[in-house]
Amino acid sequence: MKKFDALNFMTGFLAFAVMFFIYFPMLIVVIYSFNADTVNSFPIKHFSLKWYGVLIQNKTLLTSLKISALIGIFGTAVALVIGTMGALAMHKHNFKLKRFFERIVLLPITLPGILTGIAMLSFFPLLGISISLTAVVIGHTTFLICLVLTQVYARFKRLDPYLEEAAADLGSTPWQTFWKVTLPNIKTAIIGASLLSFTLSLDEIPVTFFLIARDNTLPIEIYTMLRRGITPEVNAISTIIFIISLIALILSVKFGERETKII
Image (tube, rainbow, N blue to C red; front, top):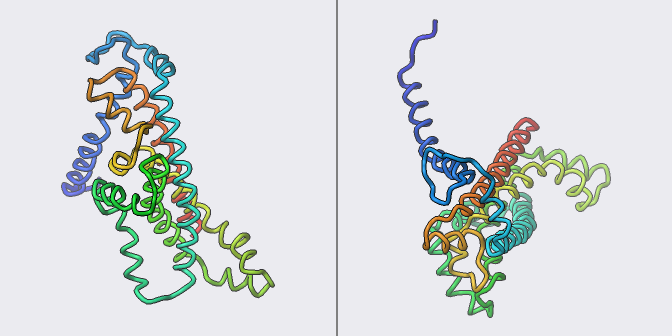
């Protein structure tokens, strides 16, 4: 019979309590999205998909969702290209202040979003970039690049250096080596970083709030609606976004686990 470990029990209990405190409100939102009544109340008397039908007819919410998805796709795509190339450059070359750069590259993530938004709001007009969806894409790309760069660079550091040397000995050009040897070995990190980047872009508010013009992203549109009170279709769209984000995060973790097994 195993001896009762009070420390492990308390650690597990506290971890469960924290997770419950974080995720239980999300579960309530999901449950309320199936409430047939206009007013959220518990216990729920009637379950229905009524508010999902109302959501489909809400052109404003659907347009904001489309805008958020497009910003996330474009921002993630640009961040993947720049971040991967940056990680490759850091992996291949040694230069002064490299260690300092490895740490400061995380600054866009660690800084408060409101500070980043104000800084971009002040700096973009100097570059001739007006406050618009283009500015929002650039703003999202800025902090997504450091996310991609750090994840891909971490994978590069665990990559067997003899693989590239063997490819070069067999007559491969640098481009062939990258495409046929390096890229297949870092693809799990790239896929995981892209899923996580899209998820973070989808629910980003502070930077978007300062750079958005007339068209709202989904988080900004929901925030605007909540100022007039919670409407049931907000629960429906929140449930959809929660499921999409959860799937993306699970896939990101799965690809991370596959990468660890490969190593």
